Image 1: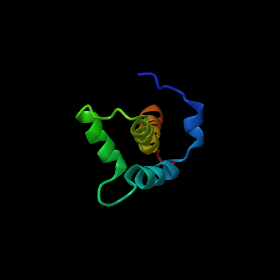
Image 2: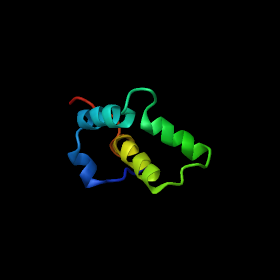
Image 3: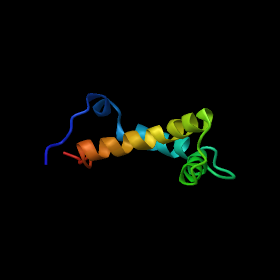
Image 4: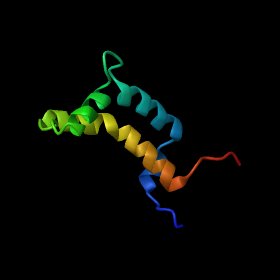
Length: 79
């Protein structure tokens, strides 16, 4: 299977994406992370406000980038 090459993802190191995913993706930590809250709103078809949609995209972006990098480049290996 041919791998997809996305140049901008090569410039983003895994540790930065992991830290961003954990901090921005799970912020605020209590009572419930925004990402979980927005996904529940999306599941119940109540995600209609533009601010809520922006918030979902904002908090999900680092996780999406991390998954894209992982699937495009594969597991990083020490050489």
